[in-house]
Length: 259
Ligand SMILES: [Zn+2]
Image (cartoon, rainbow, N blue to C red; front, top):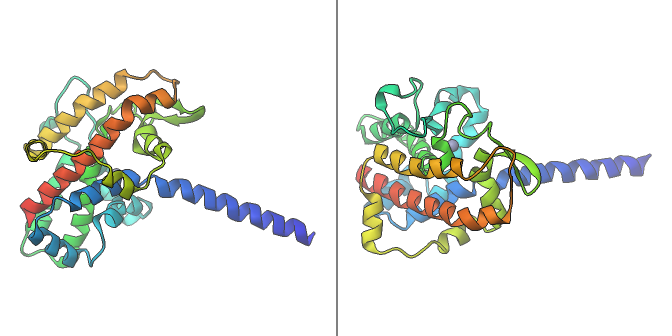
């Protein structure tokens, strides 16, 4: 009897460890964005961030906005993580979600951070939100269709297990690549100064429309219930890595402008 209880305990502990492990991997994309952004910050921006973020890295804080989804007090921020728009349309502010979306959410964060009357605590909160939202903006399925909730209802398989297109782009493909966020950041493609400058040009709305071109490609590349495997990663992992890099480069631009 005793051994059986011990056995059950081991199974339970192992199982809960495994389910946590899969959640721990999910945030890799956000951490890469934070880590890459660090390389493009001006010294003054770095100093201000260190103080406001209490020495924590952007990579560490990049997942905060997802973590607070488990806390009802933060329900009002739920819609900030995405924009829904038809595939043949650009972002139209007049059709924006009244509860907020990526564009209006980012604008609100910037406003609070810039406001001289904001407390340091508020600035820090909206800074953490901003770090996360610029990352979400560069994940093509965060600018997906309303009818399938950005691909969450678009059922596919990933290496024979049931999932959805949103999850494939959020973490399934990145996890399968099996590199930590630091290694992914270190191995980002080398860009010229002009390339970096070109990515940093434009407004947040331009960036949304820019990523939206990729969203269309992603939707057209799969059919419902497809079993996506190695060939999918071969075709798209480079795109996912590029999106994380561009996200980091643009996050740095937003922060340098703010500070
Ligand atoms: Zn998010």
